[in-house]
Length: 125
Length: 354
Image 1 (spheres, rainbow over the protein chains, first blue to last red):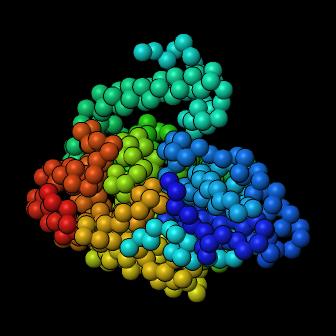
Image 2: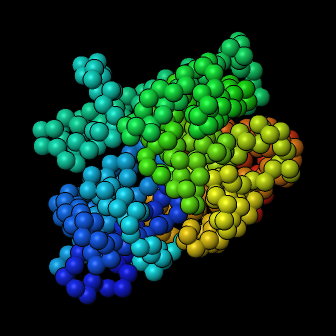
Image 3: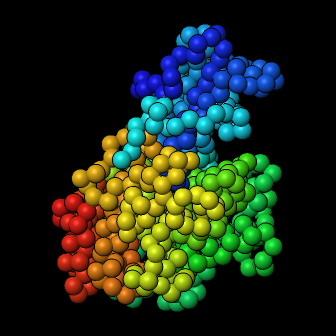
């Protein structure tokens, strides 16, 4: 899959930007948060850079996810923009790599809320 | 094929095996794949054994068990606020209230749901064989979800902004436990139409548990799912409306308007949410509502029994799409005077031909 949920194209500067999209769950509601280095304090920006690097090297192979037996689980999609390059990591929350879960936590705490439907998500309905 | 030469296989959860398949060495992958294959064949054998041991699943037949009243749940509610799952055992079967509202609501909700299945369908727990009911509460940090992980139920406290505690809604507890029942019965694959049926069946029995607990007839019930989860200030009545899918909420923080379709004409094609399992469930949800209100009276007494018979129909494929499930309900409804026509009309009302 090659959908690009980045909202507004590649980041202007060299800074790291991460878009976290969470779908599914009991509610079946899509949520999107954007984490941009420029919007964060120095400590969180450093954490963002480190987690983005770790998440990129912990990639889950596309199409390699077993459906498992979890019902109502969240799906996480993380789009990493680093140095002009863009990568996407997808995982089910319950077996997501640690840095992917950490990025979700950081996004929920400090990210800018994005409109899921401006972010390239398939709008239901 | 025998499983006895590798006794450890059944204690390694499938998701661990799946992770090994993805991330392990070639040797580990081979082992995990063969164990998964054994596990699958073991489960199929167990399903066949269950069928043999249960000579009839027909509704209206006296329970095979001499004393249905002897059926009793085995509940354990865990407090996962420490961060680990399942967490610290907080309330075991027979123990009194703990004072922790989440623990006690989960305990009571599991009891209501167990009693629903035992009394109406002579079903002894999730697997029909007295399986322990395990639930963790206070899962995660501001976790705004409830899920069934294949072995137990998990409930979060909510994000505190949109969602409150997920144990607050009895229909949500019934919904999660029903995912377990489906796993042991129709095993509806969690993708596309069979996934939307899996979701719908959980919504159906979730709301029926609540309606029965409140003593509400089909006409009196609100047919809402998760009404108690939404915090004050959220523009919405609930997360889903079985009577009027697509009308439960309209709030920017929830992505706008409730996206559920009420008719096949509006079926949503999407890659998200396993192909929109929580979205397209609106279609079979409304079919159930139409059937139950046409039949009248208490929805669990006839419509609920018909849907349960379809869910436990050994001939129902795990990849069943809406029309196949609809046909199973129409067949099951033949046991009740006038019900088959009401059920058929209900499916036609949402654009599913039967």
